[in-house]
Every structure is written in C-alpha cells, then in structure tokens.
Length: 549
Image 1 (cartoon, rainbow, N blue to C red):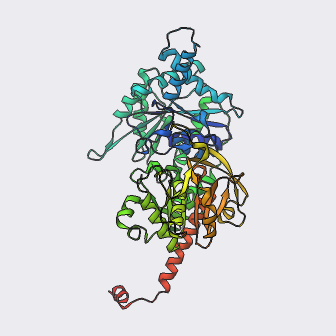
Image 2 (image 1 turned 30 degrees about the horizontal axis):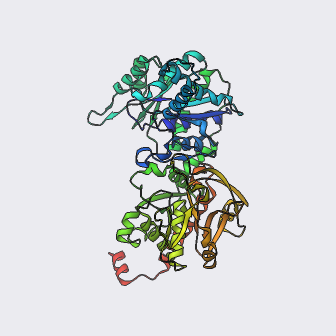
Image 3 (image 1 turned 135 degrees about the horizontal axis):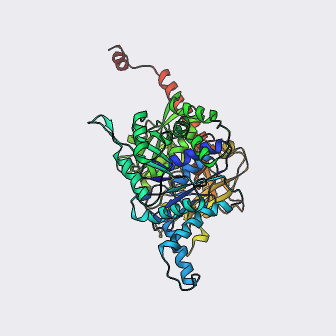
C-alpha cells in the first residue's frame, strides 16, 4: 500500500478496511506500517508533529495507524508490526560495528533494503502465520526518505512473483469547484512516478470528494495501465467505518482474492453494517468535554475519539466532543466552558503546562456531580484535586512538575529512579490489575482481573493512600502485589473514575471498552436527568412570554 500526490489521504484507513474485508472472508491477516522517519519510534516525538503514540500489549510505542489496524481487524499487534527507518539503520549499523559484514562496504542497496524485506517477511514466521500481510509504506511517492522502502517492495514484487505480491496505490483525484470537474493529472503523475522506479500498481484507491463516474474511472484506467474494475472510488465518507463497505460494494476484496487465487467465502458484514447505521443515525446526542493541552490537534487523541464513537454506538447516541483548552479554564474558570456538558474526560499528557486548568475542571465536575473519566495524567490530576479540596492538603501536587513539595501525592515509580534516557523507558504495555468487587470498575468489566496498557513514569504516592481513603476516595484497582494504585473512584458520585492506564487503546467498533461504554451510558443518563429537570421546572413569566412570542 503506497500513497501519492499528498499526505493524509487515509492509507491507514484503507489498509485497515482491506484487512477487515479479508478477515471477514475467513483469511488470516497481518498489518505492517513502514515509517520513513529516522526516529527509532514515535515515543519521544511531539504530538503536534506525529499525533498519538499508540502503545501495544508488548510495550511498543508505535504509529497511530496501528490503532486503526487493531480496531478494524480486531486483533492485538506488537513491535513487529511497525518499522521505522531509524530501526532499520540502527540494526544495520549495529551489525557493521559487530563485524557481521566482514569488512564489506555497507550500502542502501543491498543492506538497507534487505533488512526492510527481512522485517516484512518476519511476520510470515510468526506462530499464527497470516495468509496475507498488508504493508503500508508511510509518506508519498517521490519523498527521498521513502525510496529505500519503495525499492525494497519493488524487489519483493520481483522476488515473490506477480501471483504472490500486489501493489495498491492510494492517490488523489481533486475536484476543481470553479471548473466543475475532477482532474486526473495528479493521479497520472503519481502512478508515473511509481512506474519510474519499477512498480506497476494493480489497484488504485482514488480519494475524492464525490464518487467517480464510470467514464472517469475508464480514463484513469487507460492512462495508468490499471483495469477499470481495479480503479476504486474512495470518496469522503460520513464515518471511517463506512469505508470497508464502500470498498466491498466495488468488489475490491474480490479483486484481491482473484489476484492471489484465493477461494474465500463472501464476508459477513451484517454486524459492521448495523454499527455504521447506528453511527450515522443515532437516537440522541450528548456533549462530552475533552480538557487537555493538545486540543488544536485532534490526532493527539485519535484513540480516545474512536473509543467515544464505539461507546456511542452501544448507547445509540452521538457523542459530540467539546474541545476545551485547560489554559482557558485556568484563565477564565470552569463554569464558562463546562456548564452545559454531559460528561468530562481528562486525557493523558506530559508536562506542567495546563495542569492547574485540568485540576480546576475536575473540581467543577466533582462538585456538580457530572460524569468524569480521567486517564493517566487525568487520574493523577483527580488525585491532586481530591487531596487539595477534600483532604485539605492545599500544597498537594505531582513530583513530575515540582521537586520541592510538601505533599507529593503523585510520585516517581520506584523502578524509574535513575532513568535518564527518554525513549522506550517508561512503564509500557499491558499489565494486570485486580479490581474491588464493590466498585464501578468491577461493574463495568464484570471480572476481578484485567489487563490494560500503560505509558507513564509516575504513580499515586503510597504514603497518602490511607488519608485519601479515609476521606472517601476509593482505590478500586491495584496491581497484583498491591504496590501500585491503578484505579480511583468516588463512590457517592454519579460516575467518577480515574485510571492510570489507557483504556482507549483497547476499544473496538463492535466491542466498546467497558469504561468508555459505561462513562457514555452515565453521560446519557445525566443528559436525560437534566432534560427532565428542565421540563419539571415551572416556567418564569419571561420564559412564557418568549414562547408566546
């Protein structure tokens, strides 16, 4: 899977959609993302540049497209499913330093390209070997940094033979509004660029604002040497989860199976279609606020956004997300921004900026009895707020931000002491957690032991456990050795939960995460409560006059 013309065309969604269709046909599928940047992983990259860091069960910090893969094909992936140029060069240089190449000149071809091919083929050696591997090449055709990956897949196409390799190119067919027509030249040039390096696409996924007409598809077919039936219209969709259905309606999965000579039954998409129908035609709407510091870049919270979509399907509700800057709350107060919300989520993050605004937002929803979910730093801010305003520890704060603290209710984990390197050194991946059976968390999960994914260095300070509990904070989830607090709750609140892990990473379209599911459910009930209260309140004379007017 390659892309051309411009970035952000949706290769990840396309690769995920094809993976879903093939898996629904009974085939074993693996997805792999090849990123052309020199970073070893996205863990130390600014979210404004890279978006969300997606953490896998095995503790790998990966590209956000792996989140799409997991959500669509409904299976957990790991470190072998994300490859960067930095990883490739690091491996080759390490081998050269060790003397593995016996003094040979180390070059991009064959050494770098061979390592890229080895990473792709590594998935074939997995215990649960896939029938098909979908490899997404990051960037666009023509990017200098993508050339080694493109050369590697060209070689693979030649080595494996046409019956065992297929090239799918995602390209743009822009609609020029002033001319009132689509333009195919960008696609033609993009395909020509691919052909110039020895790759002939077998299928084109043509991104466009509207469906492509048959004559237009025939024109693209003629100039790009791709059969008309394999020129797939990939127009803008109301939801990303409608994309597989659009591809299937144009027989994209049939074409792929025919190419590989696979006799696979038609996919059963009934459950998926029902889910898409509920997304596009919800029975009700609610508003949930997301208070953070990356609110101007939604990709930083991609998995959270999708988890709300999944949970909304369960409650047959559209979750309208209201993005609230924690800096604005700090300056203007919480009431101005949060007064009409049905729920509030504080997401994870790093750094001291905006923390006081988050703490103020949490105080507001705690006192107003508004449903709340805090994730990672969001849970830590909830603990700080509770310590300050319920336990009366006015100087409570996190050791992450200030070293000289009277009440460091959030402290560095013991195994993080002395860690100086930033990359891949946090508490990462899936860890077990034991739940209190008389808790909101247990009611959601319906099991005493859970496994959730983590990405953090700081935890609730055990020295303050007793004080917090004596003042009503419920520590409802602990690590098996009881050393780490993973979930906190307020029992006499409508729905108030803070978790140290990232539940959004394990949510699926047809299986919403239990915490998001119940959080949205509580927000829907709160919305109804507000509506009922409004209906039962006697109208003032002013209100009556306005309605009559």
